[in-house]
Image 1 (cartoon, one colour):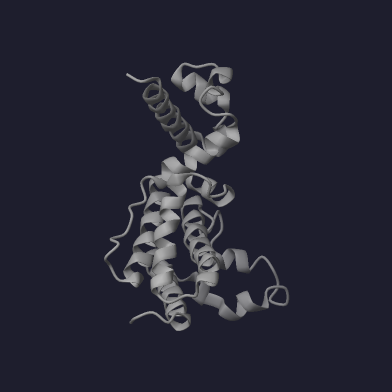
Image 2 (tube, one colour):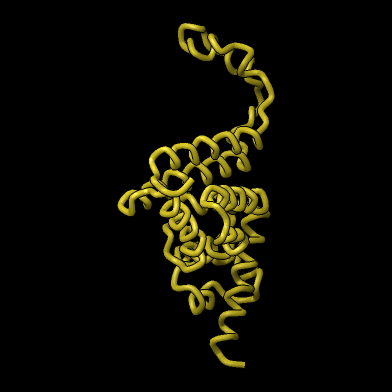
Length: 214
């Protein structure tokens, strides 16, 4: 077996171990020492596979994004945008304690770029001017990733207090909008429906600016 293939298989083993550690203990538990113990290597030996922890985290982003399926290139641009968004959200639910790393790592590896490329293509096919495609992709991805991370991390949850209890801790003069909304805020939220509604709004905005075929 070629040395390159051995190294690649060992890299995958290390990344799988890192993913397990992050899912079990959160990103704070992801140290080179913990990863090395998981795969039977010293922390120093890990640097033979990854030059730094930052590089390992970049590769971990790629490892998670490998599981985001690419959309059908023959599908309508709208369906491609939706497929990309739904695939990313599904990955967040699969790796709820690791997925947030996508929000603070740059897109540098091919695995990350392969997920962005279909978004570029769909936006161009929608008729978005080339000079505005990257900005639209950033806005679209920020909504998808931000929603997904907020959902799986519990940011959207009520915590130890319900919405009414939180609202009533402060006087209406300090929280005027909360008190005006009142019991509307106490209603249960369908996160699937809210995500799809947000996507529909973004797609409509793309369609309004684009000049592509309907």
